[in-house]
Length: 308
Image (cartoon, helix red, strand yellow):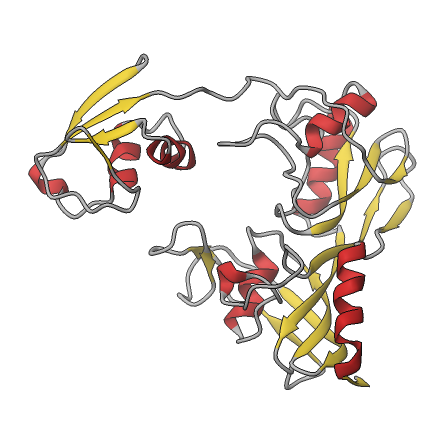
């Protein structure tokens, strides 16, 4: 579109959200990027700033001025990393909560990828120039172990293991409420929430297959500590599934939990098992709980019931 576009809202688009309409007309820009431009006043409706959720009536003139685009490639940054395993094919990092894995709309610095490039220089290019080495992801406020491929052959080998569910992924989660059963399985399909597009949902009976197994570790008054194992890797899978059975991850406001005083929700990728493409040996990597999660459990210690 160049640097500027003028869009007229057709009568038949009455009722559409502003961000939805602009994305339909300018699909080469992500919806998240367009929402950021709306927040920054770069999208005007009849000359006025409006919210992304504004419902259009038809006949409005929408003026879009392109904001800054992200870098075409990830950039190395000197950021501390906690490496918990490495060999000739794979690096395993204990990612802190709050760190984004790779650049995206509105976030281009401080990423895990940028830190990895500074530390190791070159990684697999199979995931593209914004995601070198990245075979799988963790949500921004999920901490724990994440695998990174050093080269393309290792990347493809690991990707095949993830696709065939040969990678063992175990998490520790604190959830609201007391679980009725000591263990269970959730197999509801997951899809994008049609109303709140930043969320996923497992309540519609449609979407991509997803499998989550959980086991109670300990009860803490109104909370329960779980070990969770996932057979798939859907967006927000554990958070969505646990919320769908009435036990949202503690602190996860997006999925209905009360806010926490610890600046994050309680979900940690504790252990991952895979076959190293370098040695063909089975490797199990563990990441200890983040200090703030240890503090969170300590704060609940007085409410501890008996272990299950």
